[in-house]
Image (cartoon, rainbow, N blue to C red):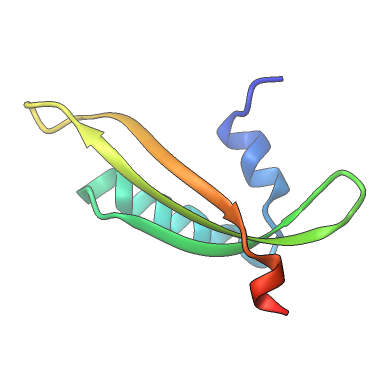
Length: 79
C-alpha cells in the first residue's frame, strides 16, 4: 500500500496531529528543518513514540519539489 499523507496522519495520535502537521507545514513553507516527536498508533492500538526529521527540497525558482524525511522509533528512550 502507498503511504500517503492521509494514511500517515491517521496513524498519528489524535493529540499530536496538529503539532506534527504544523511542523511539516513550516518546513514546506519556509524550508525550515522539521524535527518532531509524536505518538503513532498501529492497527492493533499499540502506541509507539516516533521521532521524525525532514527537509523540503526546493528548486532554483524557490518552489518545493519534494520532501525527504526519516523516522525512528524512540519508544524505549521515552520509558
